[in-house]
Image 1 (cartoon, helix red, strand yellow):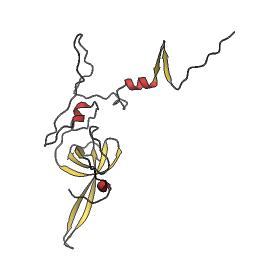
Image 2 (cartoon, helix red, strand yellow):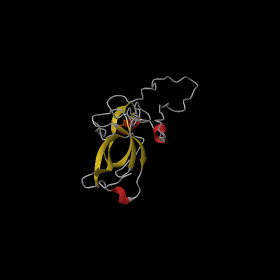
Image 3 (spheres, helix red, strand yellow):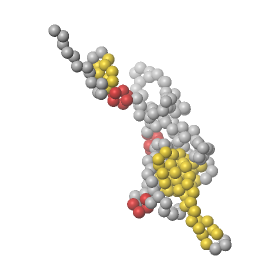
Image 4 (spheres, one colour):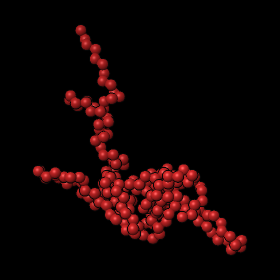
Length: 189
């Protein structure tokens, strides 16, 4: 007599190895959550392949971070988190120099890039009056900051990071008032 065997369910188990069942979730969780790119992401100033000496316990991973200066403090998330961002002014190879600007976040739809709206007044001598104008600036935002539309951010000029990005976010002032959340409202700082 033949015994009918049911095939293992393919939805729950990725691999059967000996008597140990390895699920897809356990494989994904074992990989670092910041490894989303095709190449291995690491900070270039930190050596990852250090061998552990027997008898010594390593407290935690070493992490490179710096103070950008100009009175801006390094965020706690940049020191404690394990993200890798080579364009971050606190953990990457980018120096802040030139202009320091403030503006309102208009869009956060890009990856690690936001659009900042700067409102200003332009004098028209013919009519002896001011007119309202605005500029949109693309700025790189480090993963240590969490922003939403309507927040006021301070951005600093840096080297060109892409075709349109020449600024980096240095500070975020979250807006708690609901009335100030309108995208195109004219605001001068």
